[in-house]
Image (cartoon, rainbow over all chains, first blue to last red; front, side, top):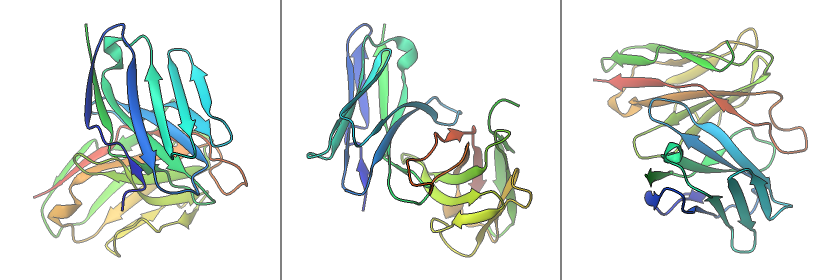
Length: 112
Length: 119
């Protein structure tokens, strides 16, 4: 039973355009969400996060939107750059336990 | 070092053997986590240490898996009687203070992982 779902395994975008990566969750106890980026043969790298008390968080070219009623969040990258090509994982966290619950990831390819 | 380090980077073993995977967290981080990532999946939680003690080991799949962190720094994940299904990338992460503090967790910083292949 997947608590965090990333339904698009891959996404291809032209350089300079917007990339939108989507994530849905089922656990209403989640109160904090994170996006990680992963290059091949490296560990995931923290990108951006959002608390459930907010609906938007922005950091440079990266913006995360949270829609609690729809249990949906999205990561916007604008403008997209070839160096953004990587696998992006959405993760949720809730309660007192230490673990993050990750989605399966979306592979983003930004073409020059 | 500046980041989380894991050794070995690759480990190939035979079914039934015992393996140890090591994680060296960021200096000063009290919380340490182990995850396992199978092909095409996201990282799956195994165990979380707060200091020397395992605060949550609910993700360990069975009693063949065990992890220790005797001095509150380096951690070792131990797998007995390995099976082919154990083949995966084992990721370690650390964070400054961890969770359970009444507010959201610190950012978890991941190491590069150990790719375990069981033949």
